[in-house]
Image (cartoon, rainbow, N blue to C red; front, side, top):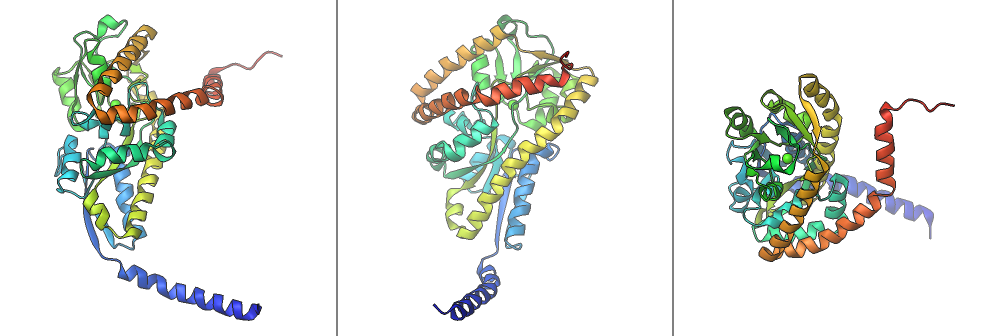
Length: 366
Ligand code: CA
């Protein structure tokens, strides 16, 4: 092969490519979408993930694909984002799918199940453990498709006016709690309430509720819960690694040029990484501040955790009997969870247990 001929052709090809790229960009249509978030602007980690997404999509398409972002309640109530995307009021939304467990309990798998996966395990399940496929079949029935778009990491167990020293102390407690955690606690006497982020403080202040869980120190401090409840419990066993999702109307998704679909998916993945990083970076200082402000940290007593675990397992058996989607997804998810827990008990858990606690350790005597 004549090297010179090859190089000439390659150069011509490269030049043609350089010319063709802007031509392709110009041939892409201008598209305007609307995105309804479930969250108020004040919660900059949650709302911020959607802000990052719309910014990146516009940037990567040279401004051709514009998505206008609306905070929770602006055009759609925070807990009705799925409905709005399904009926085409908006093309896409950013929400916690477990807000829709009233439609089908299987929506919880796209956020969190009590005693379920941590943030890394949730990503592993979604991207490589069959989670995307499993959820696609459910969301398609609602005319939507979902993509992971954020995670808070393990949450706190919430704010309580009185201490929880035994299972007995849960009886009659009116508590704002998201997802299936409320159904587990209901079996132990709690009266769960699902209230959108922007409305919780008032409910707690007015005494409509006795306890509240939201996310963790970074958000909870902003919402001011430490001013109206003293005891701050952990861990939030119902949300070991809750995921937020970008959901898109399937018809609109199909109409989108393939290049824009690629950009959108990449931006979702970026939002997914950034939300978790932002929480992890912000939580330590916020925890110090709320404790400095008088919050009393408490760990849930082991008998309470064990009673909740038993109640969760009973609930899963019931939900599997009620929802074909739940049964189908739970089987694969359970196997995946068992494998993850086995692996995380080895290197991850040994590392975390030693290193996190050694921060307060004195040097060994020689
Ligand atoms: Ca929560």
